[in-house]
Length: 408
Image 1 (cartoon, one colour):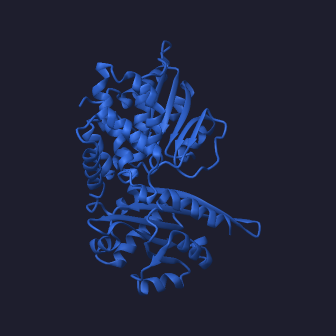
Image 2 (cartoon, rainbow, N blue to C red):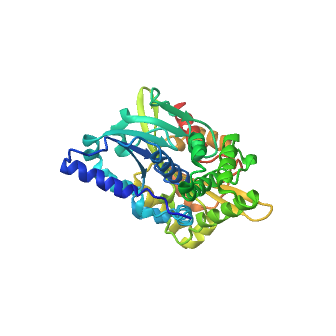
Image 3 (tube, rainbow, N blue to C red):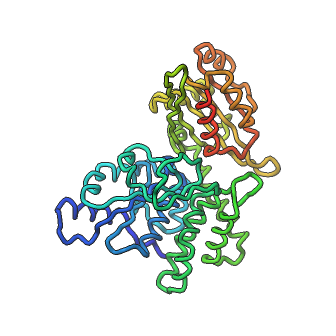
């Protein structure tokens, strides 16, 4: 399989070089940043890289598309599924651009070129990108609509299983026109394999029974399979999905700190009491492991909680939610667990927590013993649950928390 031919990192270096040296005959006038979300999971990384690559094939000569992976390069090794997929698709990560490689260059680029943003797998800017709120041009996302950037050129926010499906369907017609071009067939198969990986993982192999897939996801997969043309479609996607899943859950060697930041999103919650605005910083970490095995690895509950508390202190969190997923072989199947640790904020209010437990269908399991009582005395909350409603992923849990808090 041929390696993808666009070296985005080299393109960035060339842009900066032209800007710094103020070269007059620079043919590039416009830079389009394609941004995945800050958790930098497979869907975000694959979607943003694929969008930029497919756009590059037909964009004007004075425009470049640069996908930005919203983590430092050193953190990419924590994304074990991403590492596996990019290696399998023969795509060198050296060619990619990470957040720590672009942050110091944004001023130079934005003053030397016309800049616009495409948001993939999220619809609200954070961090260093907030300065470009008026530059948002396109959104492709499947999360809860934050109601921002309403007058942009294209705004597609749909409850599909994978945001990458929206990328496939956006470029589908243009892609069809070029499928018979002999010199493009190999790297089109490379990008098709890349796109397919994210959709299969986000939809749990197109499993409609857990509310993770839609007809658009199926349409996207069917199109990609037509390009790849494996001997047996069903066997091919199952084997591919299982390979990626095995890589994704190959995480037990990571430290607790790395596990908590590997697939992490942070939110600022706000609510009003007697005309006074209250705030709370919440983190949600998704971890593909069973809590009891994680605690055993750490050497007991106290050492596990010490690791969680250190993480919360580092991130300056008031509330940390750990959403655990694992897949038992055989009849038990896919399961979810949740740990809630709130130092302050709305979850310390009994009625808010009980309503949350009811909506998510959480069954408390007592494992903390005296530790739980200690936290209660300090007016903090520490709870561990079995999550009965396995359709409630992070993208569904956050809007529920936001609504509960705003209703206070």
